[in-house]
Image 1 (cartoon, rainbow, N blue to C red):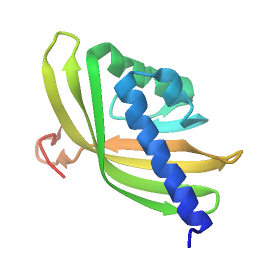
Image 2: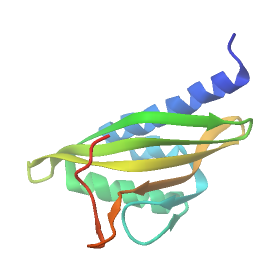
Image 3: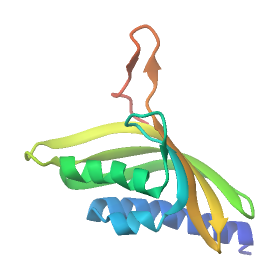
Length: 146
């Protein structure tokens, strides 16, 4: 039997799939439809936080300026869903071909997504992307695999 929670979880997985599709298509408008207007993003790029949809889209626009072709994959997505809020965590990897023609396999990052149900749609209200830190050197560890 399909419960409302199962339906909502499927819709949220569809939103994550939408991120992948929009990134591969370099589609900023497609990405915009996935985020709440007041999204707060703790993205991999400085500063510590990016507030609002325009700031989030600027981050993706910066990615599109560096990559001629973009690929993105998500692994091990786990969701916890309630009636109006949900969160998930996964591993993500941005890869592709850089504008200068250099292929890159990218690096795996840790991603957390927080969703709010707004007017019946699940939108990303917060996301966070990070890499583990080597305490001794103060450098991110970017060669790990899920």
